[in-house]
Image (cartoon, rainbow, N blue to C red; front, side):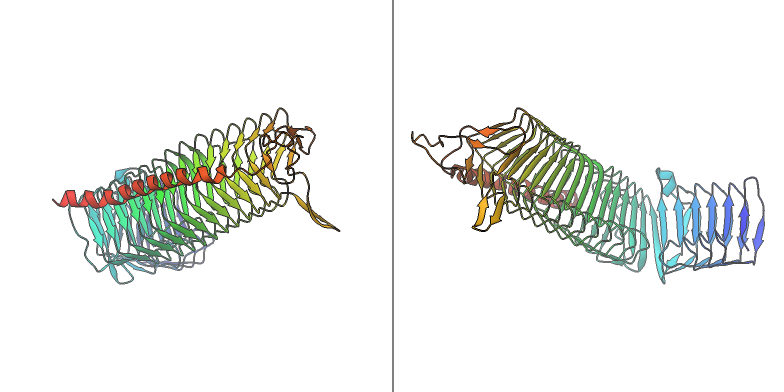
Length: 551
């Protein structure tokens, strides 16, 4: 038997029915008010046990709701309802799910296996009339509204904080915490595990610290923030969650430092639409997606992270600007090491990018970026691949031992390559295809595009050009080092470039320029010293803030 009350159906009483094994919801109310649903057994229905949409002032009392396909009770855009004394047992879904549904009463419900979820877009969606004496797996569910300066004690399964300030949650074992419109929360040294949703969820909150927590085995995100700002996420262990390890939406001015994010079923970290982030010294590995995925960001920094063995791209960036990617290790990911799309005015320097299943770096429609002092090696689909990417500069990079090409420009104009060492790549060291006005100067090419014959391995031409107006000069080619009869340090005959452009390096150098590596040492030291000072200031900020507040 299935019950479905449509619009204008009001003041109905549904009591003591067995509502089992329906192909949709067990009991569904849509724009239906002032009904009583009491003492029903609602089991094994394909979707929700009880579903209310845009329905008010209904009474859901003393029902047994078990083993339905989705949530036990779901309210959407529904308010002033009473949910009392129900027994709800679910497996892998939410027991009571309130979506944009405020001012409801939840009393004396017994929840087995799973808990409560509250989401919305305004404060009124989170504010409930009364929430008390509900338990999940034998432990009380705590709901606080407008509390100030409190410490959460032990003995709770879930914690809900709405419009609270200066609450501390420390040294507890919980399934989950949800905070909305809160400030100055301290969430420290807790274990959050086996939640039916996110381990930690903050909406429209600010100035909070989430540190040294263990967030494991939740059925949503490990840590999720939206519409929040100025939060500090440090030294957490975030593993084996069903969705992203860390997931931020519309959240700004946050620092994410020293976290271990591993073995999550989707991406390690995912960020959408944020500014002024500082992501540093995190270990992001073995996630079943991308290591770090960022869409639409400005003025952010990714520094000294280790991103390894993720099943997709190591770092995937779309729509970023004025940001820095510095001194990261990006290796053995099963996609591109560093994929950058629709980006401009960024600095990518001092990164080690090696052993990735696709390209080391792949640029798509990316302009005015600076790539310096990166080591890009042993990537399967090539070292660095530019597609429809203009006005980028590559300087003092080491690009070596990649399968296929070292660096490829395809439909990409006005790029500059200088003082790079490009060596031992399986195909051409540089490959220019349908690209114009590329400047290639003062680079050193060693043993690229080697082929085997009966006499052993030989080097074929190390560069290819099928574009227009591309300029090669003063490069070192290890297969073209003489004659230099006038002793001016330049080979007397040009180095011929393969390809339809019939281009050549008119001034090939006789010797490898050791200044390429020597000049990189001092700037690298200065860069890393600046990174250290910046990171220490970020780390010390929340500690100093807490001391100042206590004094």
